[in-house]
Length: 386
Image (cartoon, rainbow, N blue to C red; front, side, top):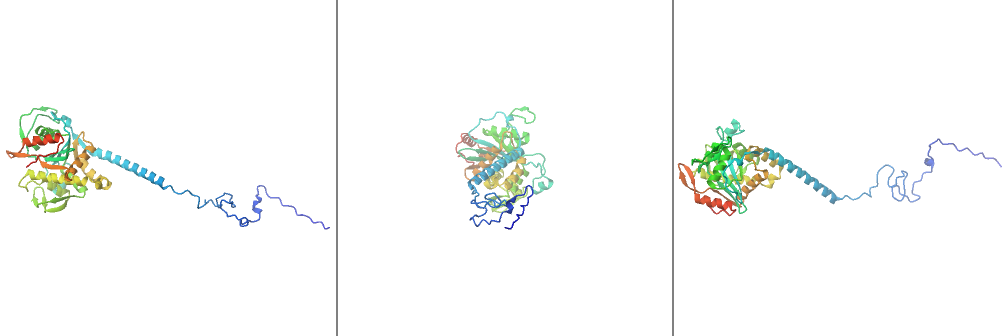
């Protein structure tokens, strides 16, 4: 028998893995499908095809309810942050310069919240070009161009215009700057003289003394701030019943519906000499315009739109002068009360007049007393100016 010599098995290097010498197995002979849970491919990673890609199926379905919840919370937090930021930004721009604690001998508080709203002829911050464009002239200092009492009541809101030519008595008062007490001497003057003599504090004191109504808050805006607010809103729509012109104010209006820009709005509320009724007709126009302005400003389209809200606040707040205790919330309430009047929730009127004295308008004492009592007691105002 022939001897068959076996070849020696070659020695493999240390660390060599002999699994790669095994015959190729396609997997089909066992029914395996590589990458399936029933078997393992050569990658040895179960549901992995050896290249690191997980299986297409087996992922959990998206939890849309949870995502919606998280998204809603995120939006709410952002909105809250913006609102808080806006509040502090706007609050920092308000000029709280009027100290009502200096007003003496004040009437008792009533059931309504009352505001004295003043439009002054201040030209602060206006350039020579602005003064020319707005027909304001260049007088130094500032005077009251319009005065209104706004009573925000549960029974309905009332806006009462006080003609600047009103015949009133200057009472005793404490000087806002000097702190000196000035006794009452029975002097009778036009109402706007009180402001010219010692500013907002004496004006409030004089209004309270002559009406018997306590003023809770004071708000004043000058020519430039008024015009800027109107322009920031894109104008204010008005329905002017009759055409009129006034060279002094720059007014030149046709009858009918139209949108007034800042320059036109200022001319509209300042016009005096175009009307036979003089100051009384002008105050009616002022009421009508302020109600329309508030109606347009206090809307969701302005309040909830930062692209309109920020310019509006920025154009008006830094020229607005209020009392030291007036918050932004109080200011908002004032605007919404004005808006309520234009929406039929209340009435606007001139203070009742009984005649004149030396060119000044004399108030009807009995009607004024009745009007003030209705406001103090939060009763529906039934008094008329006619």
